[in-house]
Amino acid sequence: MRPEAVQGTRFQPRLIAWELTRACSLHCRHCRAAACADRNPLELDTESVRATIQSIARHYSPIIILTGGEPLLRPDLFEIIQESVKAGLRTVMATCGVGLDESLAQRLKQAGIARLSFSLDGDDAVTHDAFRQVPGAFEACLNAMRSAREVGLSFQVNTTVTRTNMSRLDQIWRKAVDLGAAAFHPFLLVPTGRGKEIRDEVLSAAEYERVLHHIAQLSLKSPIPFKPTCAPHYCRILGQVNHGVSALDSMTRGCLGGIGFAFISHIGKVQICGFLEEEAGDLRTTGFDFGQIWETSPLFLSLRDKSNYRGKCSRCEFWHRCGGCRARAFAMTGDWLASEPCCDYIPAPETTRGTPA
Image (cartoon, rainbow, N blue to C red):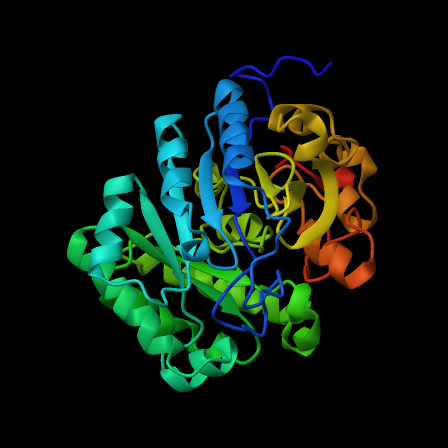
């Protein structure tokens, strides 16, 4: 029997990303899910999704991120949204934007979706469509953003940062601002799924450091929130750019996987995140009791204990703020508790440290 999960305990799931399907109309080069055109017959059905939502809401109050693949390809999407909203959970959705017009945007808003996220990987059709591998994906995405804006549905822009587009990050950010985005979230590439095929697009540790320092400078003048994802050492860098820990105080921990974040796959496997397909538990075997997995999974418990980490992450004074990207460590070393392979920072000797980060 798992211990009862109560509000106020140290490890609360703040965000749960839920991969409703791996079906998608695009064929993106970096796709962690290696999404395809057809739905998997083993996807969790409506009743299983409903039971899981109810189990989550009994003990926790996370933001639910409906993602895919493309969630719009689930015929029961609006039932799922309404169940989540009725349970009192803030519900948002990630979409590629294909087929999303004003009418559909209005339906999503009325159903209770609080925010959409759109992925924009270039500031023009040439760059974006080459990355998404479908002609017209750029215009479809922009039209979907305009539709959301017209009906007053908040949206953010996500960008996967690679060696191909890192020099265009300023232009993509400006386009997001001009289109009316409420936030801009650059994602630093994790080479999983189809992303393994573009491993050479992963930034080196030195390039990561330069790009994240540049992002920190941009964030200071951005009229909208500007938050990197899958870049946990940004918490350290932001503090360095602002010459102190005050900037860190407003940031969440870098890697929240297993600590404040969990991922539910389309077939009910619970994971650290979508980029690390290591099973923490199976909802079908727990009677769709998410809390049992969250509270007792050996995988989650191992991530919460610094003594289990290896390499320089185990010695780093910023561990409590950063944690390193566990998915990138696994993708590039085969060990999710290894050092973050794209971090250039050398931990200070313990004898020279002040107050721990």
